Image 1 (tube, rainbow over the protein chains, first blue to last red):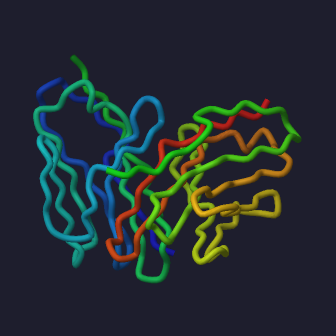
Image 2: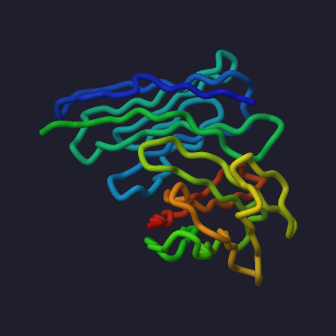
Length: 109
Length: 113
């Protein structure tokens, strides 16, 4: 099945810094979503982005489907951005998501 | 905006007991899913459900597990005889194939003692 990798596995930032999180996938995708898992364990959907670029406030995401990667940009990071960021994809054969291992982000005050 | 809801938010049970986790998907969605996340690990697919039957399931989804849509709104996951290793966060999701976008519920944290 499709494989999903994320980098870096861990990231520590000072408040106000910018960061880029990467998601690589091994096959064509039908769907790609970025999630933020908050300290209570809830998965918060950030972007539905199988291709192209989207922005939502300080966050933006770009997926280059032909090159099989997606990037999540966080600008002017805040302590509330801390948590684990997951990339999840569906391939062309199934409906269910395959999640990456996540990037654990810690934003220090 | 409509949301997927899950109850309870936290369930503690003793090993060997049966548990039922409940989900209310978004009303006009057609696909329903359960995922599991053991603490500190990635989210794993368990099962998908469409047209009142299982459409796909993972190796994790063995005979201990079952799913049901008992009425027009609820979607349940039953674990027949819980084991310690069933302790995890369980997420329900639903999707509308027209949009391709999956909505996840807030999760139920299951603790088996």
